[in-house]
Length: 117
Image (cartoon, rainbow, N blue to C red):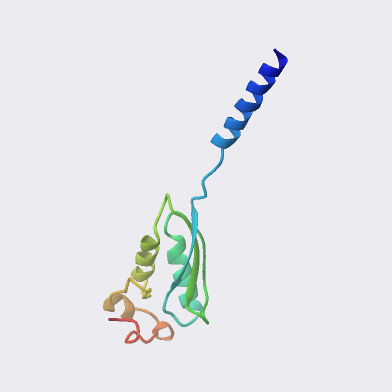
C-alpha cells in the first residue's frame, strides 16, 4: 500500500512541475535604425521604450543597430518600428514621413537617399 501511495505521489508531483513551466515570451531582435548622434540615440531608445512590452532597447551610434528584447505577447517588432518612424528615424522596413524627418535637429539628419526606395 505504501508503494502505491508513493508512486501516485511521485506521479502527481511530476505532472505539477511540468504544468508550471513558463513559456519564454521574450524575443531578441536587432534592427537597423538610421541616425547620427546621442540625441538620436535618446530619441530612438525613448520611442522603443514607449511601446508596451519592450524590455530592453539599446541603439549603437557606430553600427546603427537597435538591439531589443520584447514580450511577443504584448507587442510586435513592427509596432516598435512604427514608433521609431513616428519620431523621425527610418528603420529597415518602416520609413518616417518627410515632414517628421525635416523637423529633426540638423545634427540628426542622415542621408535618406540610401535608405528610401
